[in-house]
Length: 267
Ligand code: ADP
Ligand code: MG
Image (tube, rainbow, N blue to C red; front, side, top):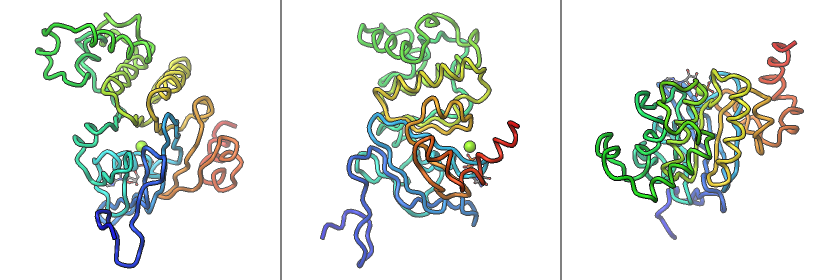
C-alpha cells in the first residue's frame, strides 16, 4: 500500500477530487477551542469562479486563511493540483501558485500603477533594483496584459495615490495575477466600492477566470448573480449547501440563515 498520503490503518487515504485544481477535504480550524471550520469540503475546477456567501462569522475568511497557510488547519486536507499542501507556510503556498488578495490594498501609493505591477512580477527583487533595472520587452508586454485585464490600461502612468478606492483594489488584483497563480482568492473585493466599480469588478473577475480559477467571498447578491457560476454557502463553520444562484436562492435553509435577513433589510 502506498503510505505517502496520510491514512489510518483501516481507512482509505484521503486524496483530492480528480480534476479539481483546489480540493479541500473535511477541513477543520479551531481557535483556542472555538471551532471556526467544522469539516468543510470544497472543490475548485480550472477556470471556474466559485463564490462563497454566508453570514458574518460563518468562517469564510478563515477558509481562505487556512488554504494559504495563515490559519493553522487542525485536521483535514488542502490539495493543490493533487498535492497535499495542508499547513504549508504562506510563502510556500504563494510560490506554488495560490494568490490571495486581502481586504486592504497593499499597494505602493507613491509609485505608478505600472511600477506596482512591475514589482509584483516573478523575479522582481526589491523596489529600487526592479524599477531601475532595464525593463525587458517581455516584462513590459506582461505588465500591459495585466493592466488590460484589470481595466487599468489608461491609468498605467498614474500614481496609485491619485486613483479611486475601486481602482486601487484593481491594482492589487493586478499584482496578484502578475504572479501567474493558478488560483486567485478574493475576500470581499467590492467592499466600499460604488455600484459602477462593483459592476466593473465583476467583469474583471470574469476576464480573470479565462486564465485562472477564482474563489470570491462576497455578500452583495447583485454582484454574486453577475459573476456566479457555483455558489457555496457557509454557516457557523459548515457548508450549508452549494449550487447555482437559483438553487441557492430557493433553498429554505439559506433563506432562513442568510438571504431572508437581507430581503427583510431591503424591504
Ligand atoms: P467571516 O469571514 O465568514 O465573517 P471569519 O472567518 O472571519 O468569518 O470568522 C469566523 C469565526 O472565527 C468568527 O467567530 C471569528 O470571530 C473567529 N475567528 C476568526 N479568526 C480568528 C482568530 N485569529 N482567532 C480567534 N478567532 C477567530
Ligand atoms: Mg470575512
